[in-house]
Length: 276
Image 1: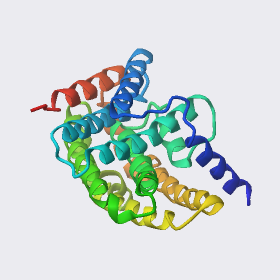
Image 2: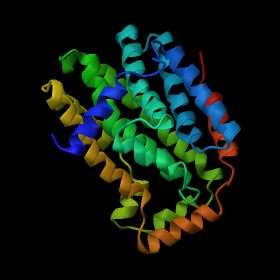
Image 3: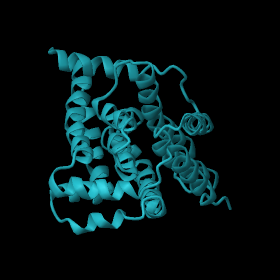
Image 4: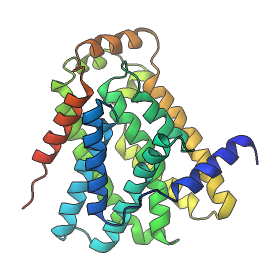
């Protein structure tokens, strides 16, 4: 096994042993609240994705309480396993431990003052949906993917609805974002047409492949998928030519305070989670 594959195996093993494991949705929400509060306190961009993900998780919890899912207990397990992939990656990053390349790109971008808010959110979604979702589905399925299909589709429906809602909400924080529509090239397609439907379908195919592997082959499959998703992440963050200039102009008029953006994303999200 080469050094690259060994790193991916170490990353996989680390992410299976979180420092503070969540066992319920309330645990996940508590940890997300901590990330958000710390990000606001330290003026960190790390809170952007956490605020978006809090909204997703709270909506899943609300749906379980209303009996909207076929099996509420299984849905909670799925949600916790899925969310823990992100929380564990964040813990690994903070503690300078090995983690997936996809999340490395996303977390590195939070240290860049030139990355757009939209880019920050898409990088988190790229790692979490394109990589983590398939792994979570494979883990929860117990080797029977048909049994988890409804939960998988339900989580994706929630992610899709809430993500597009948030994308509309960020217009006031990034008022020139519509300038991206002036471009019609491959980079623009990657940046403003990130397809959650395509990501969902890819994640499902990945999960179906993953459940056929064991041991080192299982870890190697994750490593290969991670390499692919890292390339997508690179396309989301590295702009070329006139597209790079457009992103720079958009950034000039974005809100500049990470704390203010995180607080607004979180408050908007909480306000739109309606409990009936």
